[in-house]
Image (cartoon, rainbow, N blue to C red; front, side, top):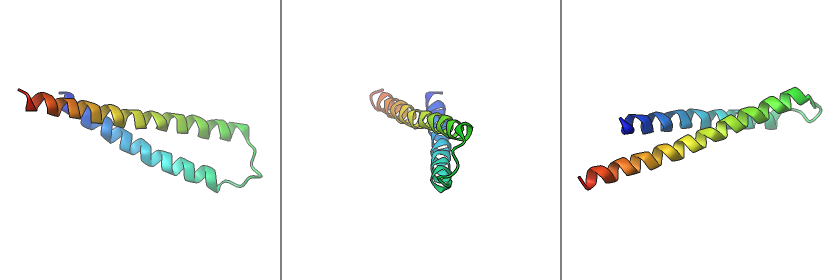
Length: 74
């Protein structure tokens, strides 16, 4: 069960990493004349959510490593 959770966390993290790259490219491509505070807040919020994906990847890798070590020492 832990392995499926870890693989799912890694999968979600990879999707969010791709989302981060897309959002970063959109933010860089916007002209500097656009100063819409709602747009800036939305992009910042989206990037913060995507940073959580990086945490999911880290947790998934740690759980997979722990699962592997448990199976080695059984």
